[in-house]
Image (tube, rainbow, N blue to C red; front, side, top):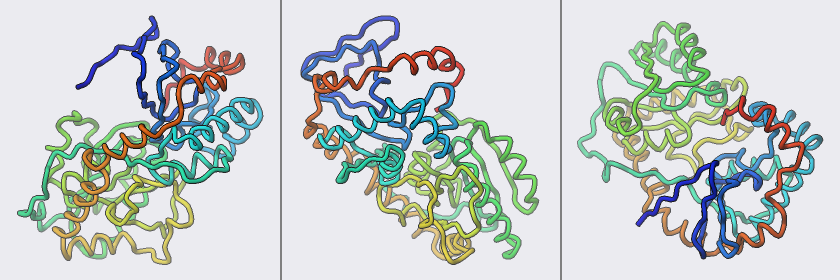
Length: 364
């Protein structure tokens, strides 16, 4: 049973007593100001993005999230009180079972950027409602004469560079193999034009651009229509749950070297939906994408089923719900403690920057 309680910035919203409240990870002063929380309520944070807990200055959000030097410069000078408060807050949550992270990358980035000294955090992968309850055993390739690739996701800076390399590698592969390939880009965003211009460089690949498909129609559109998908985040789960062999791309805010290690979603550790690219994401070989495609063409049903089974095992709602309930039950953080430590206070400098820049910079 779900009871929906409306929240508005225009009036106070009172929550019932003795609740367990789950927030997405956020800085403590970002908790909705008109939400009246009973002191005996337990609170829990589910961290789904590496920047959820980062104290960023209004107006500088994009730059602080994409550049570690800029983050450190601002966070440890102008925002030093907020940086120290956030670090104390996250350590407090970890020590008291009040937070969980969706994967290692989210935790390690949070730990590194906040200079945390802690261990043994909780992990809880992102759940996905799987529409198709079993893999299609009558699986067959879409078209024996043309390999169809899909990129699904928002076209933003940290997704662009690994996709750019993938397209370059695809072009080289299909020149050598003298085969036909079609690449469908489903998504929109600030880097859409960059991808469109990139596509013009590779005449041996056929490109199709679709900016928007209603969320409820995505599964139906992609299921059975593509051979191999490139994706990260929840888009990788959408592709995998539809039985599409999925290559998980990783995050980068700059050009990615040719020896980047392309790998299948099902070869990952069970939690990650895309890491920040580090040394471990490179190979001695320049041909890891070629190998993925070769392996798929040898046994497309096997690779597709491995992807589907991976999503079912690691990300289905059924697999995650009990773990979530157990973690929430074990939290020692209540709202009274939260208030005691004054975590929620913004301070005058933050307030002034919010007034000056907040409404003009709503980027995620």
